[in-house]
Length: 365
Ligand code: RB5
Picture 1 (spheres, rainbow, N blue to C red):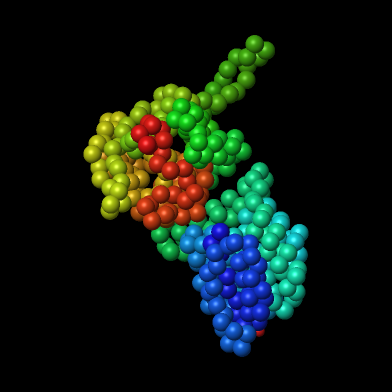
Picture 2 (picture 1 turned 45 degrees about the horizontal axis):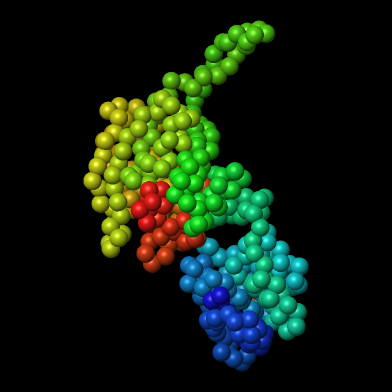
C-alpha cells in the first residue's frame, strides 16, 4: 500500500518510528515532512498536504502526527474526502476503520509511546470497513460534504440524493465485482434501477379516490395523472430502462445519444429523440455512471433545448466531479445515485467504480 506520512516537529520522532514499521510491513512510503524535530514546521501545512494526497487517491492512506494529534485531525478533516481519526489505542484504531472507514490515522507524538503507536498503526492498516448501518452513516457524511461544497462554491444547490437501501448496496457490490458475468450484470443493473424507482418517484403527487373493498367503501390514492418520461443516455443508460418502466409502465421512453471522446473526455452527441410532449413530462435521465458529468450534463442541456423542464438524473454510481459539474450547470436537477465514489482516475473512470458500464452490459469488453 502507498502511504503518505507527515508530522510537525512535535511528531517527528514518532513519525520516524512509524516509518520504520511501514517499511517492515512492506508499504511504500511518501514522507511529507517534517525533516527534523528541531524544525518548526506548522502542522496545518503538512496536514493539508497529506490529507489532499489521501482524499484524491494519490495515496491509499495517510498518517499524521503532531504533539497531541488534535491539530492534525482538525486540519485533515477540513479537506473534502479526508476522514482522519485520532487514535489512542488499538480499540479506537480498529473501530475507526470498521465503523468510520477512516483513511487517515492521526497520532499524538507527546501522548502516545512508540510501542503502542506501532500496535495502533498495524491494527489500523490491517482492518477493513464494515457495511450495514455504518455504511449508511458514512454515506450521510459524504452526502453532506457534497452538498456543502457545491453550495460553498455557489455552483448550485447540489441536489444529490444517495439511495443507500441495503438491497441496493448488496446488488451494487455484485455489479462492481469484475468477475460478475454479462447476464448477471445486466439483470442486476435493471434490478437496482427498479429499486431506485421507489425513491425517485417519492414526490409524485397523489389524488384521493373512493374504492369499494370486499368489506366496505374506503379512500385510496392514485397517481395524479402524472406524465413521466424516461430518457436513457445511449448506450449504457439502456441498461436501466426496463427496470424502471416495469414499475412505471405508462412512462414514455426517449433517447439521447452522446458518448465521451476517450481522448478529450468531452461529450459528442449523435442522437436525440424525445416524446413530443416532453415539456409536460417529469423526466428521468438515465446514465449509470456519472463520471466527469460531461455527457450527462450535455444530455440534460439537449433535453432542455427540446423543451424539457422538470428533469432528474438517475445514476448507479457517481463521482464527486460529476455531481459538481451537473449541479453547477443544472442546479435545479435532482441527482439520484446508489453510491458516491471517491474520485476519477486519469482515464476519467470512477474509482473504485465498476469499469465501463456499457461494455459490461453489452459484453463488448
Ligand atoms: C506544537 O507545539 C503543537 O501545538 C502541535 O504539535 C499539536 O499538538 C497541535 O495540536
